[in-house]
Amino acid sequence: MLFTTWQFAGFLVTVLILFYLLPLGWRRYLLLAASLLFYMAWRAPYVVLILGLIVIDYTAARVIGRQSGHRRKTALLVSLCW
Image (cartoon, rainbow, N blue to C red; front, top):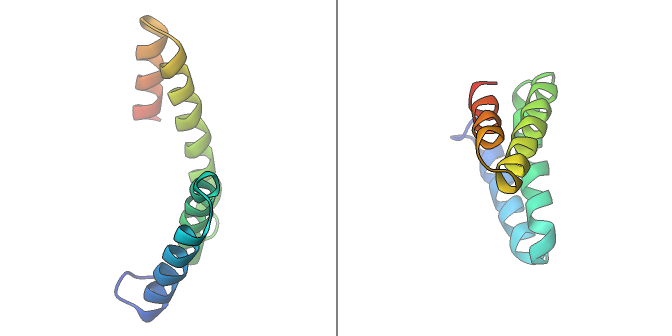
């Protein structure tokens, strides 16, 4: 799905409408699902790679938020380099 197609325009309008209709707590899940759907439209097997990166970055963010010092820097390095 290219940004310059009518298919993307319809996708974007649908996501924006749903985004503003959903309660605040559900909006992040909609954006996650829309992002995965967008990448699946291009090449579905890459979703596994994206899901792996999401897990790594989410875990690193949790470590960075809870820890200090060396573990925090290591988590940032893993997130940036993986």
